[in-house]
Amino acid sequence: MYQSFEYSLADGIALVRLNRPTKLNSIDAAMVREFGELVAAVRADKRVRVVVFTGNGRAFCAGADIANLNSINNSGDFMGFIEQVQMAFNAIEDLDRPTIAAINGLAFGGGCELSLVCDFRIMAAEAMIGVPEITIGVLPGAGGTQRLSKMLPPAIAKRMIYLGDPLTSAQALHFGLVNEVVPAAAVLETAMDFARRLIRMPPLAMRCGKLLVHTGMNADLKSGIEAERQAMGFLFGTEDRVEGMGAFLAKRPAVFKGR
Image (cartoon, rainbow, N blue to C red):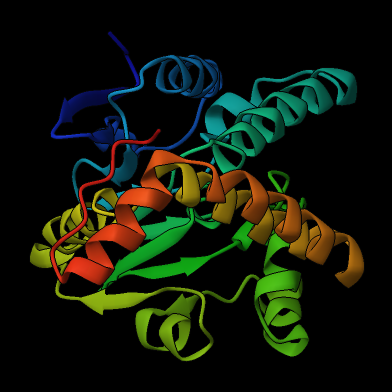
């Protein structure tokens, strides 16, 4: 189905393996285009409950394919490419289902930024994550300057952006950038276990929760609380709410159906 990554779907979990291992899964124009196609396909497929991103080979993603970038002849074309990347990554971030980055190896530049648009990050102990673009005369262009500055202490984000210094897995965990650090061999299975936990949750509440978190990150407190109230009113009328409360009172596991 795709040229830039392998895609599979089983038991509600879509697994996306970036598949340019000889290029450390670096991002080129074809991959960017296919990210957009992937998001559209996932949105249209109600069987997909969670999406997991990982990389084939020893890297998660080394960022942009520099040879591909260097072949761009002018600033206008370069800005067009950056716009396409930003649109693709924003679409992943706005996907109405939870996403997990299984960071199996180095995640630099666009690879770091891809992980940042996911809801959760599971990182290999041996991996590093960073945005070294300044060392080649540019800056992170897929949201890295903005998302890192929101997700990390300012001094840490500035060091990463101004100097290109990466974080080790231990540092990323310490600063709350990743959820878990595990040996490389266990990264994907840990991410899949995380996905299986998410699948057991009510889908409609999950989608509302994701929307509310994003609203809260980008709006004032009162607007976020108003959105929360509206979501609660909607969820109270769902079959999943009836099932969840009924199961709690009956002391049995709930079975949610997304209705």
